[in-house]
Image (cartoon, rainbow, N blue to C red; front, top):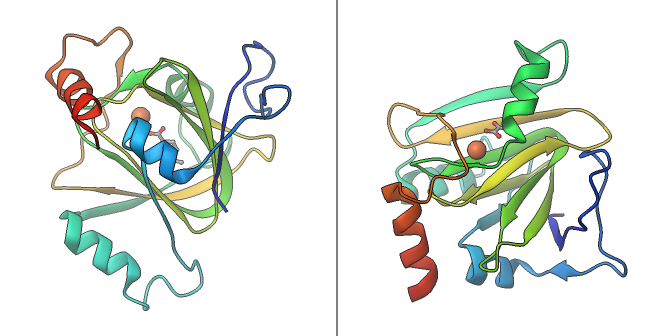
Length: 180
Ligand SMILES: CSCCC(=O)C(=O)O
Ligand SMILES: [Fe+2]
């Protein structure tokens, strides 16, 4: 089950939960209204045949899929890559991830520039809109396997903050003002 919460300001291990005291959770509805992040829960046992993933793919035009595994032995240049995932950045396209095994945290900035931590695990399909400031980290279990989806030829290029002058960022801010 996906859960999201506001993060504390501690600079401790990024893989910890970083709850506020007391914890301050964010509902999926609020997450969507405030940030444009979308979420589906799919059945990890039957997603290949039950049509749910196929429907999302055809509704949203996703034509490309691959699978990424993040662990020291599976991911090339592991240390460098996980550092890059955790640098605050945007993309010019949506970031779409469907968790097949393991778990992790996507952190996104809300409309007041506060970090919201989204905990994903098996069956969670998360869509981060183009232009949202975000980052990714493994949690303390240290492993995730996820499907990546894309419209057309994938572009994974991160643009680290500050990227406020980019069109994708400006368009994101406009959407946020007018309501997702
Ligand atoms: C959960 S997939 C691993 C992270 C990733 O692909 C990304 O941050 O772009
Ligand atoms: Fe990203």
